[in-house]
Image (cartoon, rainbow, N blue to C red; front, side, top):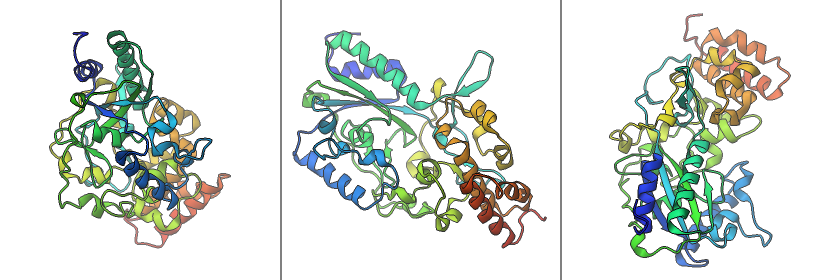
Length: 377
């Protein structure tokens, strides 16, 4: 590695060594600049409209009342550039939109990740931890080569909208489904960032990629709950990923049927995207696919207790929803399946001390009993 190389060259080499599929550098806009104001215009009204749902962390403000996510310099006044790295988690497994038995649920592709262990098994891995370890390794090496600077690494945990900086770093354009789309890699990308105090020259910054969504509206039309209210805009409070992961308590009854068999997250808007048809498969060992989580049987998941949940998902993103949330989601998927074979478990749950689970199971029972059986019972 040449210590005299440009910052962009150093970052590209370090990112490749760390196992990232793409990287770039974006400048942090000056406060009140046209670029800074443009993002503020998007964030403030979106939050004010209630489209963030119950995700209070998105609404945090500083002592002066400024929205932390409106500008990176509000939270990190010293920030001058952001290094963005992307990891490819595409797999050869089926899409959620492909035919599958109604007795099976869907866990979002990003939560399938695992890494081989010494006993030949694939153990759960959380992309947050995997990417954060890589970013910190890059951070240390960059300081050794480039000199000391202020920095902070984030993977979905900081006051920063990663996809915006990914766009300005040249990783891709923001698609109509609000995901980052890369012309070669598609959208199955995990993003991690290193905010730094390094002033970057225009030569270190890639051009903003051209928006290649064109007239396509497949993601908008495919969204079951209408969360993609228009091109490039999402109502997170309607998004199945939000409902099955972030939402606590009962999921609004009017949205349950549209959730279908999704029990943790949702991939539909990415599964239908034409750019993902040609996307290469990821070869990241630490982000391998756990085959048991692809189209998992609902009755298998329903039988899991606290100990089983901990063993199956320890170190996995699925722990975010907790066992209570997973059961609620499974109950909805069972109701949507119309399979009468699920009635005994749902009747058991309808008497549970967990009032959310009990109410959801009662709804699912009504769904099954009010429609023709699909399993001949």
